[in-house]
Image (cartoon, rainbow, N blue to C red; front, side, top):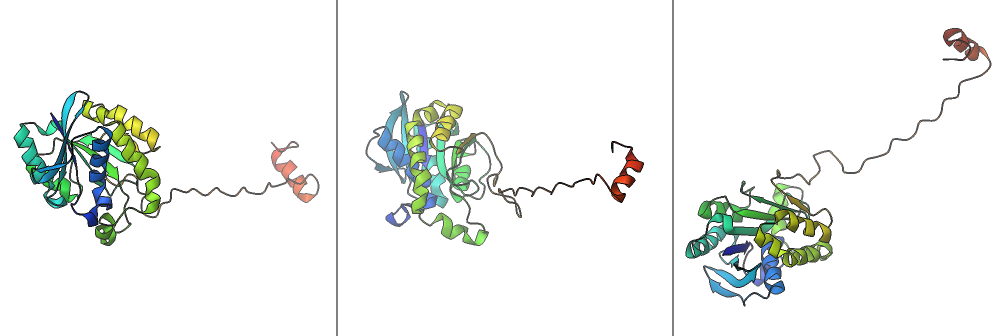
Length: 241
């Protein structure tokens, strides 16, 4: 038995928020693998299905993001499973849009949903971090994460959600490398396995990803006759070398 939890906020007004990309990924898995209809339990919407012959419970906590751990913790205790059998899909500010990182354990990185999970089930669960990008300053973060994805984001968002759903079996099997490889093919440059520090995909302050080519210096011609030529011959010999 495994639990795959997608994080987000309940309600129609949050449906397309960047903060709800975890919900979107869970929905995509449920559709692709014909999970049961969503029902209410554990203060969440849940759907049951099979991945690679193993029972999987999809969970979308309805407690709002900062209380997500209550819901997932209740489900974990009910089924008597360990955090090692839990995978959480959620948004990551410090990854560029479409980038994905996967690891087990680690810090909350300022994410209230992850902070809640850590306090309710410990830290030894698998985390699939889905990059939504950073607005550039701390003051803009709240409106950014609770804002809807832009229409242009569909170019990477839909292929990525489809790839997560199509390859959820690999995720359930613990084949992190295979799962990430499939995602990188769907959205080139999106996937990476293993621990990483926050902000690795954002340019350092004052730096740019664009390098300017240095203009070529004009060729300096050495005179063959005249006073300058005579001086060079005295200094370096007849051949100037």
